[in-house]
Image (cartoon, rainbow, N blue to C red):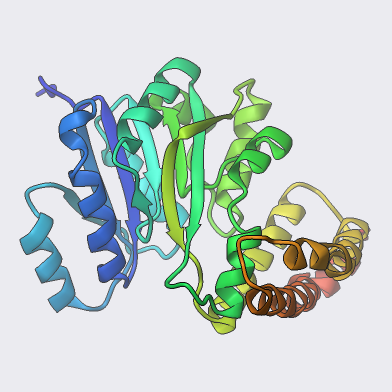
Length: 300
C-alpha cells in the first residue's frame, strides 16, 4: 500500500560504535522536530559490537527513530541504505557525532526545497578551554564548509541536503573514495549546483588526540588517492599533491600563530600538529599509491 502520510524530510545518520555521540546527536534532532516539517530520523548502524549500548539507545529513542543495519563497512554504504529506506522528498545527512542547532532540520530543508542541493555550516566543538594540539589544529583548519562549497563545489556529508529526485538522478554514494567530494562532482556534472546554507549549523567534535587525527587522515588519504585514480589522474597529479602538502605548513604556520581565539600555548600546539599531520599525509599519499600497477599501466 502507498504511504498515505509520508514525511517530507528524511534525516539519515550513519553510525558505528559511538553510542554516546549518537545519543547526543539524536537528542538534538528529536528536540526540534515539533518546529520542523514532518520528518523521520533514520539511523543506520554499520556494524557496532556493543549490544548493551544499543539496547539502551533503543529504550531511549526507539519510538523516535527508524533503526536499520548495514553489514557492508563504510559510511557510504550506510548512507545509501538509509536513502533506500527513506520516505521523504528531502534528504538530510548528518554524522552521528554531530550536534544539530535547534533549527537545523527546518533551515536546511527550506534551503533544499528552494535550491535543490545544499551544504550547511559546520563548527568545530572543543572539549574545554585548553585544547589539545589535535583539537587546536582542527579548530583552525577543519570543516571550512563555506570555502568547500563556494570555491571547490562540494559539501561534507556531516551537513548535506538534497532533493530526493536530484539524489536519485546523481546516484548513490560510492564506496572506498571520498564519497562526499565524489558525489558532489557527479552532481555538478549533471548540472546541479551545491549552495551554502549558513543558517543550517551543526557542531562536530574536534578529534582529541594526534592518534585520532592520524587515523582520520589515513582513511582520507586512501580515499583521496582512490578518487584520483578513479578520475584518471596519474602520478604527476600525486607528486604535485605531495609537494603542495609538504610545503603547506611553511605558509599555514602563520595562520596558526595568528589565530586570535587561542592563547599562545594553544597556537604553538596547533603549529606543531600542523607539521606532524601534513607530513604524515605526505607519507600516506606515497604509501597508498599503487606504484607497481600504475607503472605497469603506463600511468603518469
